Image (cartoon, rainbow, N blue to C red; front, side, top):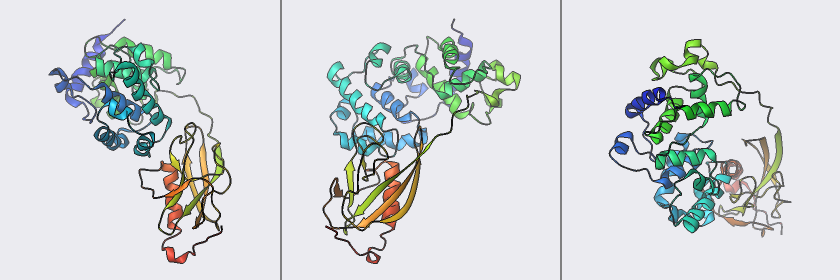
Length: 354
């Protein structure tokens, strides 16, 4: 059963306090008849998965400036898209981005399907992303549930079941509040509320538009919700990468396998810590530059960085100049650590160990 009390209060608040974002059509523009571009909605939702709004803005603007339509993106070279994605993390998203764009062009004439089932049939689009596109771009009453929505629903209804077990209950509650009128604006309103007022720590309950309706506020339990099951500690892996430099500043890089960690990205050759790689990629007198640390979804990583100056021919990969946007964050950390070991270059003797 739908309850419009919550959605009415939230939409009234959203009309005044909606966040301004480069991919969003404002409530005023939406009321004036401006329709959101499904391509921009989809692109922003994929970028925002497990990434903050602040981190995504610049990437979104670069992507839409370089590839303003889904057809433009579909025609782009894989390496160019992966290069622009570098630094956003979770690189399987970039591979799915290209696959989805190409499917939209090849199978749907460059137009995103306007049904949940049609959207779910596209590569890389799961239940959340399909619902977000359906509601925001096409104003369908789809239930959009992300971390912000789960938190708002848990507090609004004082749900104490820990996540992830609480997901079905929270989704059903979110569905009960999703209105038939302006469902796209409502979906964005709940997310804005969770991001700006109903925050994980120190929620600003005093200025919340739902304060009179919030069961957790009345019970004094809001700050402790949603509850989460204790997660096991992440394991730590160890590995090695080799950073070989030419005297002109070029560095030895190789294209990583399409599938797996940092798939399809340029990177420093490694020793197999990730299931790829092998022995040292070029003959040289190597020395240890230090360690870099990085955290992936399921494990922590400590990489020892070996570096050398050499003119020997590589056994794999190729020497090239690298910019900040060419390398994922982990590889950029290792590159910068190794490069610092060769400044100024005169303190190192170039080794030709061929």
